[in-house]
View 1: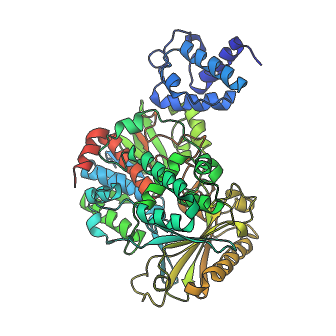
View 2: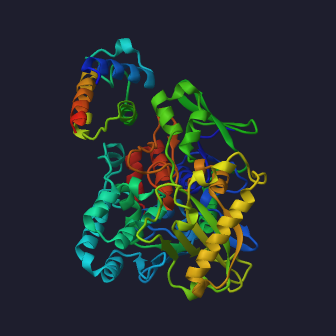
View 3: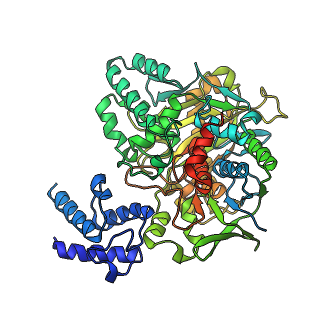
Length: 87
Length: 500
């Protein structure tokens, strides 16, 4: 299994490509909505991309809703992978 | 040409959206690729008999229900004659080789009684099934117009629950399970992919009452056309939209195949969303969204036999649709590995004669059976009038087998059946511009998010069955929502609710 750091790099790479974002701007403290220009319509696509690319199932809506920054998203993905690889 | 809104497609979704917008004071133009308006609710005529493909009966036409509200607001309700089917109307379910006959009444109370009398050991399960369907729908504004619309459309939705495991929790009886899952025929999803939420939206309409319209879907189309004309909307037939013009970051117009361009600031696309990425510049959508539209999984298709029955179906039989279900099996097979002859089947009267023919002489019937794109894939590279070799033979064989099965099962009230025409997934693909011949748009199922009505391109909205819900009601709701997004969702919803 790849390390958390590798996972985060992969998430950045995939999101940059799928949402036409500049990886340079995707620093941990960057907010998805204000800084990166994503909007509520992109949220569904984000879930689809994460599920397809990493084979995980995004079910925790409360956690998903609380994601504001790139770092929040990384922590979310790391936690999800840990939970689902245990299951 | 210049207008406020171009609506692409003239099925019930496009007609609803266009009428609502025209009545809200917008200049509207509908563009339709075919020479006739109405999409899949339009009637077609063969040998003097009118056939409804996509409209047999519908729910939600009771006083104050969503379709009633929309048709009243659009000025269509007074132009059509609606017949409620209850209290005694039903669909009938039978099984291959079995003796069980269950009537699916269009009423919660009656269907509950019937199920309990057919499956006396399953009373608790039946109650909890019906309760759950109602509970789910009580939270949905389309079924409970007192609720605001925007929070429902914009809010995060819980992931759908699998219908199969819910049914497992209410019953172990395979026949009851099949009957409870049967409304899946009305949204085209095999049970292993059904979500309880989608099922509830369709089943609730079904258990709340059914309505037929005199003259079938064509009367509804004609009603809308008259309402649109009165409201000053323009309708262009034989006008295929080929691209959507974008200026800066907003919709600027629609280009038609013949080279015409209609300048506008908003566009509603009511066809299958997979056509949209090819109509806009690549830079408009993010790759993730573009890919999602292009790879949408689609609802099932159908095989259809259109013909006449020797006896008058409506005099001989009290039910509307008669379903034949595989023994202990499911209404919709999981994939094409189940041979057509072992799949479910449905027969219905087409609901009326073409005016110039006496009803007693022409008893139009339609027989439907689930179809998969894989069934006809071998003939995919062909167009109407120029089908690949072997297709006619294949089609005739499937049709003959359906007629034979129908006569064996329902011959006591149909007499001999004479087929006029057979449709396959290929027919549906070409007639309805539906990828894979899907009859209910993109599949509303587990593991798929169907696209929102809004898109990231300002001024471009989606409608049709692929967005919110399937069927006549679902497509109408999609059209209504698209119109609402253009004029302001919540005030629009409030004015609609207060209309009657």
